[in-house]
Length: 326
Image 1 (spheres, helix red, strand yellow):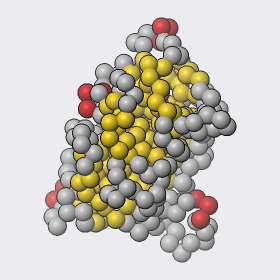
Image 2 (tube, helix red, strand yellow):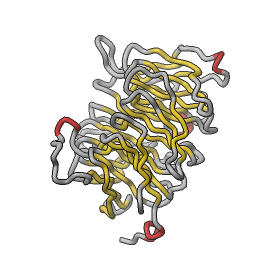
Image 3 (cartoon, helix red, strand yellow):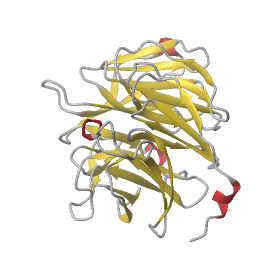
Image 4 (cartoon, helix red, strand yellow):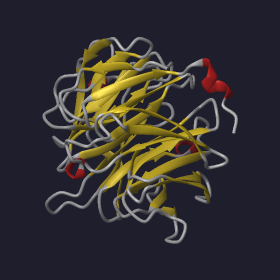
């Protein structure tokens, strides 16, 4: 399995997202410029210029016409995927950390960081079909959790919002009223900051990764803990195969704790686990720094990883991968 190395970012990667068809891959990095690539050969298609700070997150609409990005410049921008034109800018008083389109693309959930006097918040915005009719107003704002909210995504049928972040608690909110419905308990939950969250293809369960060196699989409706995957370094990114029962964890030390002359150069690996048996089944090495982003192609036949080293590595699986037996 030879990776395709995609070099388009000057700074560490923060987020990767495939469109629903799996032919485009969107990458965000700390260099202000989200980029779109062909997902089969890693060719760079174009960039989205306009942000003035690190871009933490993005999402793409179901029909691949709109891109939404959240940035440290305290804005969330809507883009035309095809032309790269900015369609609208939402302004916040603090950095935007996470964005997620609802099913139907009529709503987006956005999380903003704590900043100066502002507490962290989850905002729901209505997304107009015609950018000229787009407004700034929030349908709902949820304030409550302490510490940064690193991810917020929609639950089944857009009825709930699932959030997780610095306080290590996963919460489920009612997306109509903003009331908290469930939260993970201290015993079964993570012990340190939750860095990442990935939903299964059918939305019935989701995976969280944490700096406590583990990832956990949860039931979306009941917030019951199903599985725990233990690894030996902090987890920065998680992904779930839509095809096989595999979960992938990526991570490494925090950038500040990495020594530059580490003898394990190029050894930051994406580790594959059997979703059911919780056992490690393999790893893909190659990055020269911690892995910050992971994404599976919706067809399950390839995956990509983005690192602190500024590279996106795109891996198309060999036929053997589909026959791994434990």
